[in-house]
Image 1: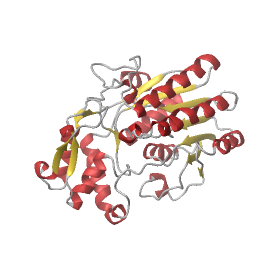
Image 2: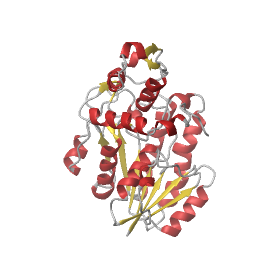
Image 3: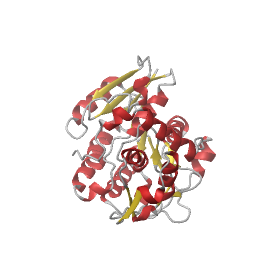
Length: 330
C-alpha cells in the first residue's frame, strides 16, 4: 500500500480528507495533529468499524518537529498532505507571530528536510484564496497575491517559500486553494454551524457588516474529492483552485438556516461592525481543476446546509457540552 501522511488530520478539512482516503484500500494513512484525537462528533473517520489502515500521532509541529521528521523518515510516505495551520482571521491581528510560526516558520523546517528525502514523490500544500485579498472579477491561479490580514500574509509567505524549493530543488509541490468550506463536524464557532446552534439556543446571530460579504461556500466532501484528484493526477508544480459555481452573501446563508429551523431572519439576527481586513468577496475560478482533473462540485448548498442542521439536531446534547467560541492556542 502507498503510505500517505496527513498533517492537520484533527482539523475539519483534514479529517474529511482522511475519511475519503480510507475508502481506498490501496492507501495506508498516518494522521498527525498537535492535539489528542477527537471523537466521532468531529472526526468522520472515527465512525468507521475498521481503522486497521490508519494510525494517528499527536505531535505539535511547533514544539516537536524533530519527532515528526523522525516519523516521516521511518514511515517513508510517498506523499504528504499538509492541512496544519493557524487559520482564523480575526485573532491573527492579536498574535501574528503565532500564525507565522505555524504557517511559515515550522513549514520551513519541514520542507527543508523533505526536499532531501528520496521517498517523497508528491507534497500537497493546502493554501487559501485569502492570499489574493478581495477577489474581484475572474481570479485564476495566475492572479497576484495581495493579502489583507496577518493570517493571509502568513499563508502567502508559505506559498512563496514552497515555490522557491520547487524551483531550486525540484521539490514535488502541488498546491490547492479552496474557497469557504463547510459541512457537518465543522468548528462550532464557524458561521454555518454557529447559526444553527444559536437559533436552537435562542441567541441572536451577529452578522459582521450585515452579512454582505460574498463567500463561495463549498461542501467539505467536494473539496476533499478535489484534493485527492490533485494528489493523484495533478501536475507537479501546479496550483489548482476548487470553488463552486457562484458566490452568495453570508446573510442569505443564515436566512436559509433560519428557514430550516423555523425562525424569522429579521428577529434572529443583528448587524454589527465589519471585521478588520474583511475582504468583500472570495470568488475564484476553478476551470483548471474542472478541465484537467474532471472535478466539479456535486453537493448543492441547500443539501449541505440541510446536512449541517441535521448534524446539529442529531448531536444536540454532545454539541451543547462543547465550547461554542473560538479558543486560541499558540
